[in-house]
Length: 421
Image 1 (cartoon, rainbow, N blue to C red):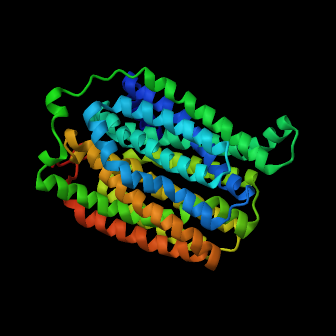
Image 2: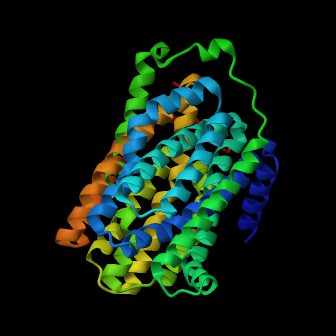
Image 3: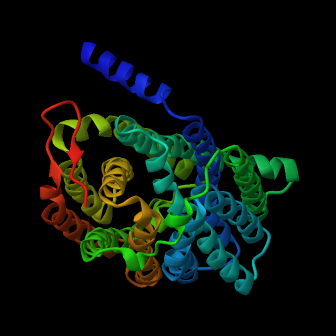
């Protein structure tokens, strides 16, 4: 009990020291993530109610990753050259507008175009966030800021998933309609409006433009060692992206098709998953302080594998839901730790560019596997993609350990201090 109180007190001291920029970013993150969670619960169901099947839905969901793969490098260069704030503001603004467009159309061409362009906008936003957190935190705050940022996303996901599951029925009462399609459409419109609201805190961020000398530097100035380091992170990310794309976009359809769950149940499952993951993410800095960031990332990924296999084979709803919660908590627990570790190893002038390469590797494989998995699930059922995902995660975890365990000097004091490149 005393140890838990000390843990909470330490967390509180670090969080209270966050800069105003970091606080504004966290508020925006909450609003944006709540919007994304609502859309995540509903968008597949909206497409299904519009008459589209898994193969088309899988292709649609792959477009965001395809866009990131195509535009990650230019987006990362722009974020390094012009600053983090412009990238985040314009990326989120355009992403919100394109979510609204997707909510208002069922035309294939418009859905495809809006999804692809939305992926580009999300790329511009997302690639600036990790460097922004790195540059707006002290060494002591850094792991906590990355973890709190992720925890805020998860907390917003709890709210958004619960609201997303219940909003269709509420919208039906407001619109006086029992048509699920119209209920889903109205829910997505509200999600888009919430996303627009997330832009407002970002406008208050104070950021000096990068120095002229820094803007003139390009990836061509990076050394061979820098690119080798980036390549190692990218290799690990592509295996996670390949596996994640096979299953994660289809969790809502998995519960509908295999167990006959409704949108309210799915929203509840997603929200409880976010609660467990939030608690795990908040505990992650303490685990990383003792075990090191690299070992924490590897251990959490390996521990998630039995639950992936269980989801593929399971026919009992309660066991499937428990496995769903455990897998999400373990995998996502490692995400902010891995992001902080990567940003610490990379030189400042290359952070967004390197983040773009790593994100590109993740999202290109996500896009390919999502499209393939939609077809695979429609033809062969839902089990095989879960087994393949477990193999992909295992390859990533083993590679991560082999590449990076020697780059982190274990602490003799209270916190690990990774070596720099």
